[in-house]
Length: 68
Image 1 (cartoon, rainbow, N blue to C red):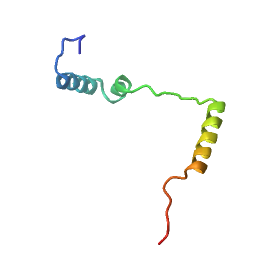
Image 2 (image 1 turned 180 degrees about the vertical axis):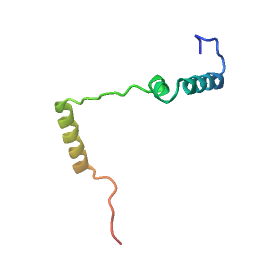
Image 3 (image 1 turned 60 degrees about the vertical axis):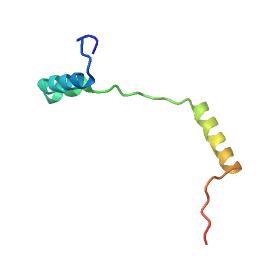
Image 4 (image 1 turned 90 degrees about the horizontal axis):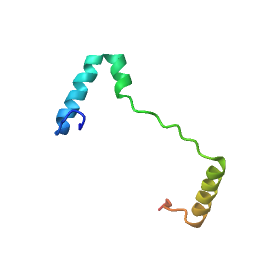
């Protein structure tokens, strides 16, 4: 918005939509696509989280269904 001296968010969004539409389906998809995050969890962290979760469930199982 600062690059183009736009003060209203609605105007900025409208301009983005119009410009994306002008690019066509393939290029507009590339222009507005969000980057995907590639998350990798260390095996040691996964094991620790799993162990702590199981320990907590043993300590406090949470909501339990009690038949009438």
